[in-house]
Image (cartoon, rainbow, N blue to C red; front, side, top):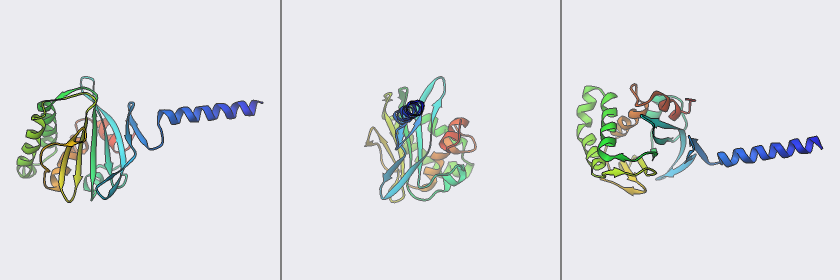
Length: 195
């Protein structure tokens, strides 16, 4: 009888755990992201997920790469398609978001890189500023597609033109994975490391 009860409790606990984090999803503070996805012809895996907190929780995000890595340099150097997926927890003005991304790129780039990236950073900033307010719950996705460039989609709709150059996408990734990331524990989470 006791063994049956224990088995039933174990099964119940396993079912509860599955309900909290179903197979096929990674989670950051209750926000779920697929653990794998297809981007173009590439199969990507969720490398890690975390929460951006500044004066409260701002957004949840996941990093998708061709293969998992706990090393920031390896993530930045990974060849092929990549994805940054963000779910806004709080609404953000396009101007504020563009400014934060531009500052993050600036903080993680040398002078020669800044000069090479300047026009493309402006292109992205202009596109994001033009969006006005981006509502809470919105999905913001930055994809790197080698045949097209960096593609920004908001709630499934492409915004602006593709941005050329793998160097630009690497600079974008450095906002979160660079030597001066926007948030250290978020960097660790995106690299699949605990807080």
